Amino acid sequence: MRILVTGGAGFIGSHLCEALLAQEHEVLCLDNLFSGLKRNIVPFLGNPEFEFIRHDITQPILLEVDQIYNLACPASPVHYQYNPVKTVKTNVMGTIHMLGMAKRVKARILQASTSEVYGDPQVHPQSEQYWGNVNPVGPRSCYDEGKRVAETLMMDYHRQNQVDVRIARIFNTYGPRMSERDGRVVSNFIVQALRREPLTVYGNGRQTRSFCYISDMISGLQKLMNTEGLHTPINLGNSAEFTILELAELVRELTGKHSEIVFKPLPKDDPVRRRPDISEARRRLNWEPKILLREGLARTIDYFEQVLQTTGLEGSVPKTGSSGVVT
Ligand code: NAD
Ligand code: UDP
Image 1: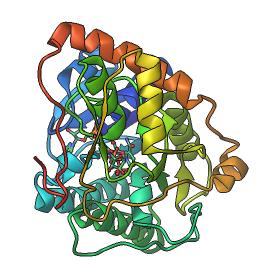
Image 2: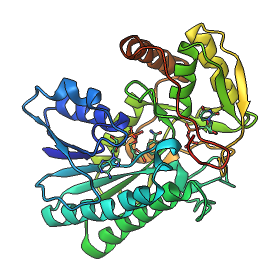
Image 3: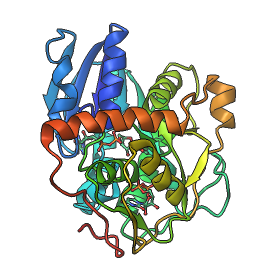
């Protein structure tokens, strides 16, 4: 098949491109390189089945493809809050453009949605039936509400125009090829530990997240895309839940570095608890994550050790301030 991956130079997108190329598909990788990295796709450039298109999905584009994975959107709070209006445009106008393409060429389209559609959840763990608790006017809203509109658009194009849609609600995913300047917690802690800097825990560190290793996420996304008739949202994530303090301690142990832990203000609207209920993914996709956090972190640490050897140990990771503003 000819498959379009928007956001293909990003963390998840580049792993998806690699998997699709290994399965001998033709891959069109579309990215504006806002938070993605050329180094993520350089290894594929010699492959005749791979094509990179530098383009912004907020602008229309005509392509002929069989499937579309719509992943284009900054995922780190630091990046999506940098230009919130642009984040909304990417999720709304970008998704409309990709749905228009899917409708025109009768391609199947998968939207990368997020656990953020549940906001600061009052139901735990979060199942697909829960409608969420989202602040519509806060610093995270450009992303949370943007993704909620993207889901709405997917379902409306499906009901109104019979577009063959899939919606993946992705929970915190980590692994090699995250940028050292990404700003999300796993990359921040690893990079800080390797640089022997203090690990910055926001709030008291008792908030929880459930971390899914990248290879598990890629298999989940592909299973969802290739399962017939599954149009409603499906949670994809690892249901093992950790506090941020537990994550910090595990990173210290696995890196063998004894960085101190410093506490910084909690960003506004930071969700207190998050864990996916993945019964639907188990039942409908026969999918569940295999990689334990300890193992996935070890692989990710190996990656960042190599990156920091090349790029140097100097610098600091981006941080989100208590107002939600990037510092
Ligand atoms: P990422 O920032 O590494 O990748 C996003 C990619 O999209 C980047 O390469 C960026 O340059 C590109 N992009 C952004 N805006 C664009 C635009 N307007 N036009 C073209 N390209 C654009 O993030 P990621 O972790 O790989 O996330 C990929 C997708 O998965 C995103 O849609 C994100 O919302 C979703 N997601 C990720 C996670 C996670 O934990 N990684 C969790 C939930 C949802
Ligand atoms: N976090 C932290 N230190 C950091 C970066 C993030 O303690 O250097 C916290 C953040 O406040 C949140 C959790 O880690 O509670 C996950 O943050 P991330 O930005 O990775 O993702 P999200 O909040 O979108 O789940």
